[in-house]
Image (cartoon, rainbow, N blue to C red; front, side, top):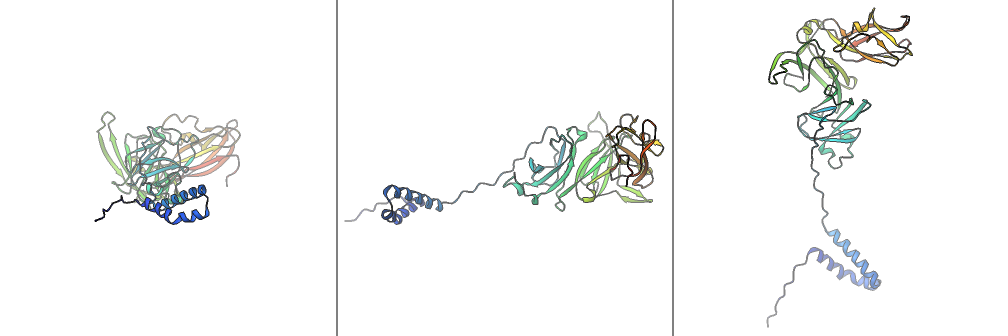
Length: 375
């Protein structure tokens, strides 16, 4: 008589492993353990064996989700790197920035208006642990004195390039003095290079973050009808400067020794022929009484450049007072000028301190009046 074959369901891998545990390990526990203890140990051993046979699940890759820009802010980011970036302030994450050159506004509270450290990392280098980035993997780093204000005129701009040659970023302070109706755009390296700033007449000390490196500056001058948004008239370019009667490119060299530079943008036409430029000088009165500052035999208010307001009594500095004067640099191709300065008592006009200070187009000069001779 033919025997009937009974097909049993195929055991899973877990069931097979459980049978193996029961078959080979049960005699051992029967000989050496009590019934209760034997049951607990057998259960734990079986669970351990089953777990070791299972494949551990792997978390899926973390996805990049860009943060929305702030409605107002003290930092404008232009990301030309074509990479997804993460912004940190003093090693704390602030924003995940999309790979887009669209203007991206960030507000970073900075009540003291002191220098802050801003770090950018590519998403690929921090995605496993965004809250603990490896400092060795930083993409760009900028030490910049951010304003506490979110006003447009106080806003810093960070131009982020895709170049990976240098990590550190310099601060370029751009000023375009009044006395003209022309607007100006600032380009790097060519007329079709990166546009790092647009300025209207009278804008001063506009901070731009630019990678360390060697650049040429190219200024495009234009006019726009305030009543017509589409009215744009190109007026001309300045791409060279005259030095000792010869034309040279307008170089911008940024490195550790030149990580905070000032560039005074000339007016179209007149500035090309006269060669007049400007430098800044910050004077601080550390003496116990107010002082009056002279440049040569004139009050410094009669010598300095002032875009807005009245220069009346700007020469007087109160105790612990400070002011930044914009001084002209005359001469074809000249980039610096020396001024003989003196600080005098208000009551008797006697001199408290004198000094010869050199101002330059790319260096912010300082003078502290403390009643002691400067070295």
